[in-house]
Length: 458
Image (cartoon, rainbow, N blue to C red; front, side, top):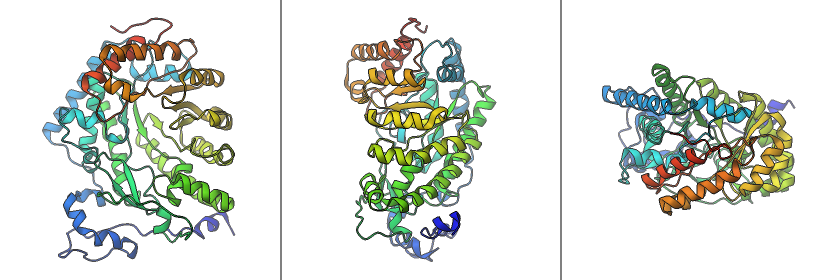
């Protein structure tokens, strides 16, 4: 049996999801394929949410005159911000990555899962727009994501993808109002990949099914990259302001999503323990998908690819066995050569396995504030890697402004205590951080962002 026959022998790819151009006369209508039964049985949900027609067969949205003016003014504001700095944002980022002298650490306004800065800017903290609206209407996403960078004068435009691969395998996926993806059933259960003894959780939030990669979610993502780069080109910011695109997750997380919903952490461990050879077949198919997806994102024009892969959600033995797939993805799709090792939580038990496996094919390592910043600095100095450690978002959200500055000062005092440190600050992304608190965090990060030299921005 060839390798291709091996993985196709257990995985039956669903038919492309298509619907008639006009709404069926009655709820239910004519089915596109048997596996789409649930979509038509929930037509009432579809109508209630008013999911736009473009989602099922994506076409580039047209920009109105007013929207174009808004984007042009956003680009002009970016120009003004950059003119006040000592380095351009893209030079600052790659100087950090390669260990070249820089004026300060790069700062990225947190926009993870869209539930943060972007909608708050457009509705003036009125809690009117929801993160999920940005998925339904991609122009809102583009405008607000760029507006966040212009408003807070940060260094990286960051666009977040819609799903963490929960839907790529046919799972019954919804998005909560905050845009966080959840599953009602596992992808494996929808594609004939059934395991009776493998339980899965349910979370029936109302939103929409993510279709195949040529539709909706991924076409939406690639369009955003192209349109942002085009506006940067027109504004003279191409090669000045970097665009970072989230491509989470890698093959480990994608395979987990195929076995169980919401990354299937428990299910993944059960499956690997019971049938490791079968699990490796799943991993190889997931790797093929991830390579195709990441190449598409890279070729669309993004400057930096940002992704994690559930790298601290397994035991160390399982991590050591499966990390080869993440390494292969980094080799295949990233430019400059290398990728990111990003995960949540304290992954001190795993970090040596991860970095040693990747070698030169990982240039960035990162986690959140529960990975002690002292240990993070020591590890990344040892391996000569670019790194970050998310701040505690609750402190930024609730603290007095002077306390935010003191908190960041102490963090940077450690993070930048060695001139060879390649630290950068990805920022908080809590939904409820007030604008003044967010600005205080940005100001403190700029002020203390190159601590040993004491370079403070004007």
